Image 1: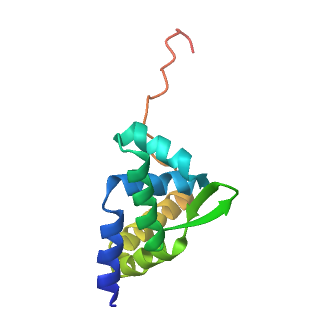
Image 2 (image 1 turned 45 degrees about the vertical axis):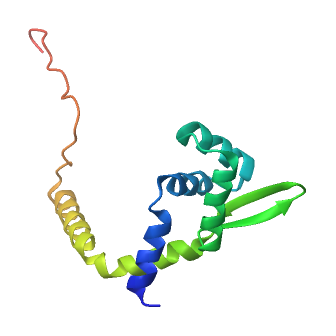
Length: 132
């Protein structure tokens, strides 16, 4: 399978918002299937069996792994699917790497010149007392 096929397949798996949300939950650490199902039920209104199907798709496509602990099934991120996406993105990194390199250069110039970076937010209030 080519990198294009792998990338398209991986993005197809993660194209579903429920599966993306499950991946976000798993990114925080290992989660019981029931807890994942409860969150996606509240957020998406899907049943426990539907959540289990999404977990199965993630597991079968290398995005999640499961281990048994008694009667519980604990899910965690499996990096295999993410590595496939990373490999596919390699061909596109040049589009943002150049901008990040340019930003690093500008920050270095600012440090050498002794200037501070421009910040957003409120400006300091001017001193309004006379004689100061």
